[in-house]
Length: 201
Image (cartoon, one colour):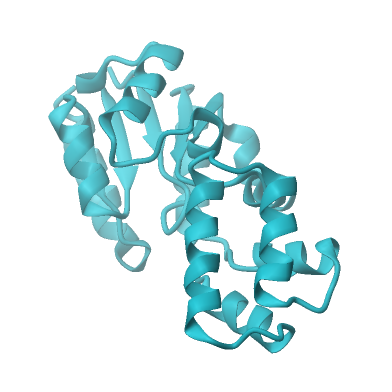
């Protein structure tokens, strides 16, 4: 039987687009030169990989781009990147009803975690999560997958891993997971692949 399903979040459970948020930040910021925004992107990566905490990120990001608003406004813009995926919500609810343990493995940051867990009830279905900013590790590094394996006592051949990015799927497959590269625009194909895999377990 299927022992667990391990999910990425961005563009799997929640489609997202960071570009409009960046444009909204630009519109409220004094810095327009590419160097300032390149530095902002590097800071974002440090934040997601645990190299800087929320306070440090905000303290560096706002003056770094000359943002005119306060922390609360910055956070609202920063978090306004996600949209729901009703088809995946239904899939997750069905698997939860079957009592299949569901877990999260995501490259993310605590501002986003606080936002999506508060605003999207589907996250109440999950039994645990491994986040890059907490572990100071990022996919596709095998090490963060091993954290999930150990923490949730996963048996990879009986665990489905779902991610939108090929490098992450490739790592999962190397570690023995049944891994699927997901595209929210073709959800029906994912459901078909899931049923075919589940029939072999």
